[in-house]
Image 1 (cartoon, rainbow, N blue to C red):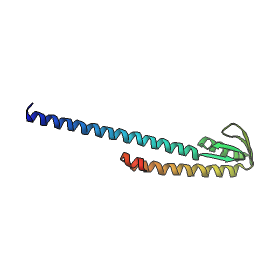
Image 2: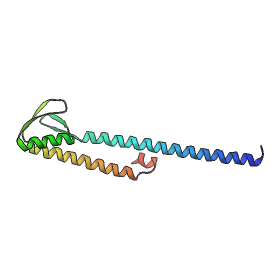
Image 3: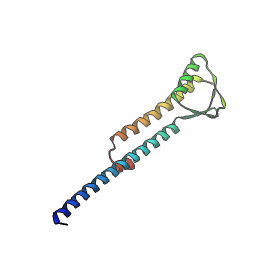
Image 4: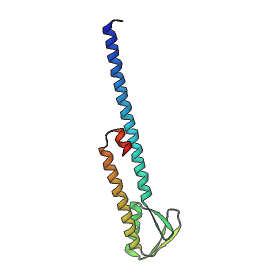
Length: 129
């Protein structure tokens, strides 16, 4: 092979190596970012659990709407918790305030993490965050 051909081959190999390295870095970034996002969702689900009167309740918008509707007509009531146990709630109004507060705190934290993810552009930043 001539010297020019060897130089050309070396340049092409280096370009391919750089493209592969770039693709691998992008792939690692996406994988790491998706893992961190899933961890944030799990953290949110954990935060959106509320315990009262021996029951454990998963707070969802549907559950909040149901409790709100029930509290418009009743002062107290029986709700099924996450394990389908009937739990007597003495003050639906206070219960609603509590679950709304827990829900809003959890969502605010989730939003803050989500906003940080938007700003992270390298795998190293995502991992160390």
